Image (cartoon, rainbow, N blue to C red; front, side):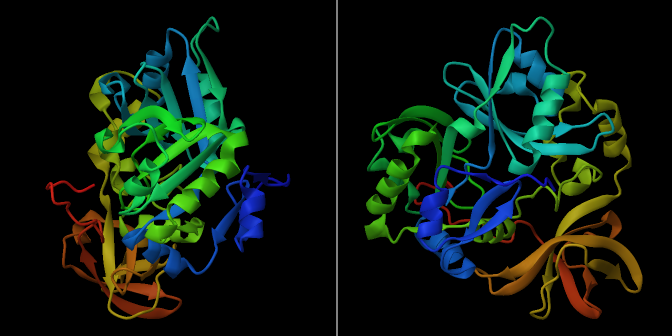
Length: 374
């Protein structure tokens, strides 16, 4: 961890003055909760929550050789990304270990940008710079410190944001991106999310941060909007079985075992880490699974998973699910023990807790009347 002072978002003073409990996360000073994690979790599941996610890295590109540059550094096939769409991808090192998982945006004008994890931003920048096209005509710009990024998540998110936005949000599909105005702010508007619910992310110049945040809070009062912190963001993503770097993903675990091998396109041509990833795919004998514990003890990251008396893997994330009312965990275990319904045990601080393999994700949001899960 760096000894330098953590960075602060443009909303830091607002968080502090509204009972946000501040912690250091990924090199930033961020709110972990305002009320309780469970209350904020349930607010997003049932109504609408507002998250400051300005700590996430935002990198934009310009020049003639952006596509081959991104193809070289990322594992997914950027050439398949159409204007106005977003692609989940990975940044690997030469050994096939993961530097980060990222989102690649292709704007309606064809320009590319990346959103990456806060704690890995500098490592992603270093990897991009190490493989930059020669000549300097194609460049990147780190916009993280100059912009604010807000996520509005939950079944009422579209209604609340639409009241302030000049583009029809219903036309923005899942993993799509556009530009528009939220009040006076020109924004990049995307529809992805890290909660398992419908929702949007808006990015704009940081000087508009408090104005836009408070306008969203006011617009959402009738829908029960609440500010939410990193604690609820983690329990929400966990129920939706979304991987988290440092838990399900890291520089040593192969992406096929982590359950994100689908974002590795080995046939697209050469890219950093490809040779190692070919071997990982051929030889991976482990798999990320969901586990439901019989009791209420929580299996935290690092807890050992056993089949009989034989260790077969390790818990990567675990919590007591507010939505489902069960103690759940994700783990990477031997593929031979990964079938749904397999009975296992977890060593939870010296206690052998019975558990069984269950289907992921633990939670999926309800299907809308149109037949789509938004």
